[in-house]
Length: 110
Length: 111
Image (cartoon, rainbow over all chains, first blue to last red; front, side, top):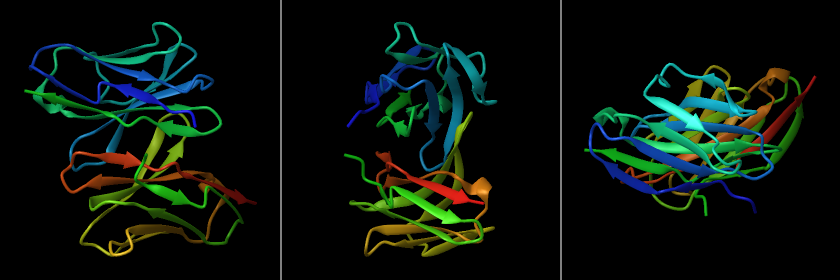
């Protein structure tokens, strides 16, 4: 069964550093999403991406964040100058016929 | 493999009927959450139920949790065509280390 793959599964970074979270969506899917989940809280929408551009973004997705589909297979979320409050699980999802989540990347900012 | 498993995978009902979706999981959890998948923003949070709770209501939604059976159900009463969507359960384990989505139930409400 096709999967959405996220790497790394866990990343620790120092405050102020930049991180790139990587996702490989299902190959024939056209819509891509990033979500985050702060420990103990609900999943929050960050951004959706279609046809190589952002289709919708939340108020959380400010200038600190950017997304890219650099090579037609990877879908990346870049967080510039990380803050402690960026510590969360980050989920990628892709949608075609169905909607599939990756297993998430746990980002810890210290 | 994912911990939350919804059933049925697909459900088709008439407007006005009730829809029940189930979710089973394998390990101990801190909480269980139900989401609806809309286009555009994707997921919409519906209800969070903690492991020490048995039932929660929100409007036409009712969620139950049976930790002895490791299962939860989402009931949508008096369904409407606009309820047509995919519904996902997600579980957070006791250590806050894993938050896992199930594959979802695709609900179709026919007018």
